[in-house]
Amino acid sequence: MPTPASLDPHEARSRLHELTVIDVRTPGEYAGGHIPGALNIPLDQLDRALPDIRSAAGRGEVLVVCASGARSENACRTLAEHGVHTATLSGGTGAWAAQGNDLRRPHGGTGATWGMERQVRLTAGSAVLLGLALGEAVHPAFRLLSAGIAGGLVFSAVTNTCGMAALLAKLPHNRPRQAELDATLARLRES
Image (cartoon, rainbow, N blue to C red; front, top):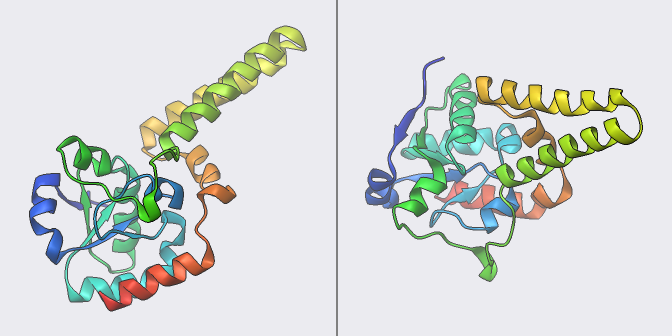
């Protein structure tokens, strides 16, 4: 499948008033800072939101964003498989903020929430260290844990996917509350 269309942060900022922006990061990441007017629909909730996203795409262009652009590209491909054409923000919210653009934080959020990439680095690093420590103290076979994590990281880089991030996204602090997702979908219908 071809690479989704993309907008650079400068172009997106100049067209923000005419775009429907969907942020596919976890609620915690979204609360840490998001593009003004962006609606939070986590990547694993796209299927539920598909009818509303399809309707929004029929009214104008939909821009899908995440932290770096990888998850939003995956979301754009998934949506394209369902006949919904969208664009992604090149470099994600990281590139947006690096160009000096504003990030909003709901309810006075402090931005102290850890992004998914940071959560993955902590989990992978901890698992590697645990495997090495247990390999020395208990049994050398525990080193296979470290090797498995390393292999997973290589696979993640080659395929531009991340199974560990998908698992971490299912943790309670990374999940939207049902009422919040319902409210977001209602806002999407109104836009």
